[in-house]
Length: 168
Ligand SMILES: [Zn+2]
Image (cartoon, rainbow, N blue to C red):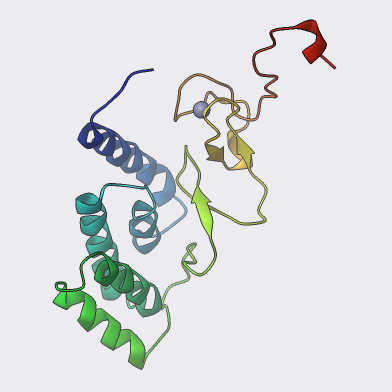
């Protein structure tokens, strides 16, 4: 297993997310894509930038409720800054709605699909990689895992068997 510097890994995640954006664009909108970016588990400086861009994209699209959620996360990271975040929050308090229908709900916990980056909400059907346990939408079953490039998504993994007594 190769050990990478945090920065490199972040950059890789950002590139992967950018690629996935093309996929998502076909059936989704800007606000949702910006929203997914904030769930890529990036390091704080990158997360801060992505939150900032997600907030302003949602704010401009009048998706105030979602923009307000990003503003809250920004203020959590650094309470001293982000006057934009405070403006967005104040606007949202007057009108807590989203103008467009987003495929993104910050109130509902979710994981992002490792290949398409669409959210998989709790209770929704998904498939996972038996090697690295990344989760994917069911349509990705049978493809090579895009996260580890090692295993087939949804394949049944028996693990390493060392003794016949382990086989049942
Ligand atoms: Zn994997």
